[in-house]
Image 1 (cartoon, rainbow, N blue to C red):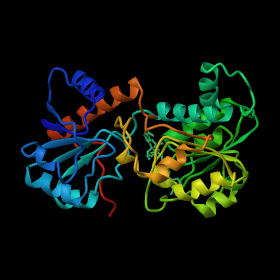
Image 2: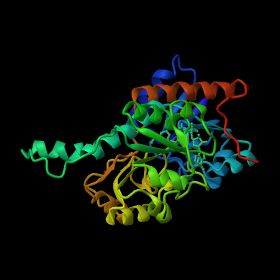
Image 3: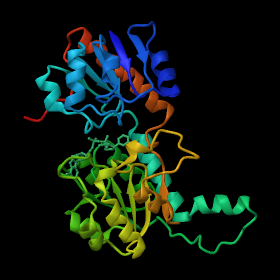
Image 4: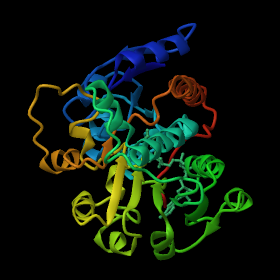
Amino acid sequence: MKVAVFSTKAYDRQFLSAANSPNQHELVFFEPRLNRDTAILAAGFPAVCVFVHDQVDAATLEILASGGTQLVVLRCAGFNNVDLQAAADLKITVVRVPAYSPYGVAEHAVGLILSLNRKIHHAYNRVREGNFSLTGLLGFNLNGRTVGIIGTGKIGLILGQIMKGFGCQLLAYDVYRSSELEAMGGKYVELPELFANSDIISLHCPLTPETHHLINAEAIEKMKPRVMLINTSRGALIDTQAVIEGLKSCQIGSLGVDVYEQESDLFFEDLSGEIIQDDVFQRLTTFPNVLITGHQAFFTEEALQNIADTTFANITDVEQGRSCPNEVRAQS
Ligand code: NAD
């Protein structure tokens, strides 16, 4: 199939090209993101391949459909950037990669926890400048602490396993209970109980209308003073302004985020030397107890290989008229 690949970086080209052997599909790589302004580039392509910041809204889908596109291939798990109802109305099939790096994301969340707790990001700079003082680097033992996991799907469960290995107690909240989480000693509780009793809270649920700003001022007020908050899921799970207030009052002891509500204006691009216009993001970066990474939790060799392999399996399923297990449909 002829596929227009949007939001292409060098690493996408490398892994997709290698997995597309022996040139099963015709790939044309475009650097811009897919949106209503760039959709015209896909005219004549039966398939487009997109990532997390492409805007596959109704207007974009209409332009794609008029150019002959019948398939949107997400090379990510989340599909909150796709108007699934509009796609269905236009008879455009949408497929995704449901799991490409659950270990990578969970391990990155642990990286944020360890770095924030032991202030490794500060220690790194201090030692390079000849400052060997320990003042301000005091951490706490993870052993015996309580970790609250919101969303115990693939990533949340792996985080549970890892934190259990550190000797942590696990509290969990999900709309569905996982027997695996319970088998490792985790306890499902309602959100207020999780907020009140967790030393570390890590978010692993999808962004939906129900979970939008799940962490708001009211939730933060219920948390243990000096709680550590980790978000590797989606930026809009957190009301950033409320979190900034929580950091200023020290109700939040530390914050580690790999995602940010307005990240599409920033992440994945080299903006060094440019003036960042987002004052909320800039305020976040001023806190010594905030660690931000730019949506890199998934970014492992295994993930890029999985993304490429699943992407081509999805395209081939649709091309050959087979039902694709990774199709996503609008909820009726
Ligand atoms: P998953 O579908 O396996 O698990 C999600 C869990 O959230 C499910 O158990 C589901 O029941 C639960 N859930 C749904 N609605 C909920 C609600 N209202 N409250 C609480 N729990 C709810 O997904 P996953 O593979 O574990 O991924 C989790 C999230 O991680 C994805 O939605 C995605 O946004 C994010 N993600 C981030 C990166 C990254 O690089 N930072 C990479 C992959 C995925």
